[in-house]
Amino acid sequence: MEFVLLGFADMPHLRWFLFGLFLTIYIIILMSNGTIFLITKLDSTLQSPMYFFLENFSFLEICYVSVTLPKMLMNLGTHRRRISLVACATQMCFILMLGTTECLLLTVMAYDRYVAICHPLHYSLIMNPTVCVQLVIGSWIVGIPFQIVQTYQIFSLPFCGSNQINHFFCDFPPVLNLACVDTSVNEVLIYLVAVFFGVVPFLLIVGSYSKIISTILKLPSATSQTKAFSTCSSHLMVVGLFFGSGIITYLRPKSSHSEGTGKVLSLFYTILTPMINPMIYSLRNQDVIMALRKLL
Image 1 (cartoon, helix red, strand yellow):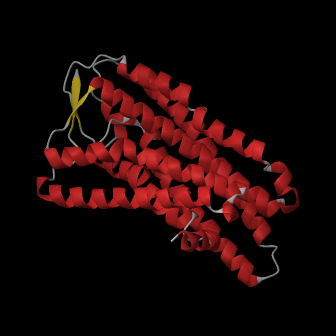
Image 2 (tube, helix red, strand yellow):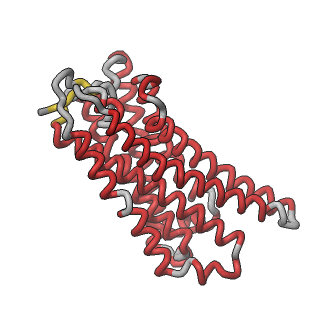
Image 3 (cartoon, one colour):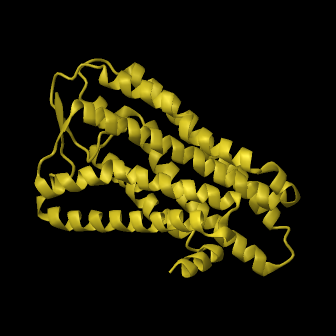
């Protein structure tokens, strides 16, 4: 009827340090992404497709961390680590749906930059308001049926042994380890979904930025090249961090699964990237900085 999220129970001496650290990170994520969402909504100079995608991306990051961090903080602060079967399934489902949305939205943002830099004369025609709305809606809803079915299949398995999940949230690998039947079919399904929603978007993003970099190299000004390369490298660093940690988590063989490594990798794609994304995608942007100054 319920599981126990062990989280960081093996480090009791660091309990309050971790509580303070994750609380600070959560506040930073809420404030930075909330600010970007607010200024892209209110400022008339930020009403272009790029900022429309950033607005949705910032809202997504707030939702994403709010599925895991509050529960983690409660567990650290109260030592009450229990979570019901239904709550665990709900948390897993939302993590997977929002994670899928992030993969697709990052791909859409890379495509937007590709069109803007490689086809500037056709940008307003290709990225018209209708197309932008369709791309965002598609990013939010495409993964929902897949992840609901996948979560249902996981929690239809019999759990008849230990109820202790050695993780700080309900993730696939540690929950599957508690099932007392053969889970090979579920693992194959996880691999297929991870390839479709993880590897394929990652390759599309790399392809978009390859075209962007090729176009940048043709720019006559060295200053323009340096500025564009700086932006591209920052974006690719965040993409690599998010996709790399996520793909390794869900695509590595079960025999190589280490619970400690799984927890560390999960910290990268659930907490670290939502914290640095606003700085990389928005707060280095002069238009966003000017809009923020006006708002303040």
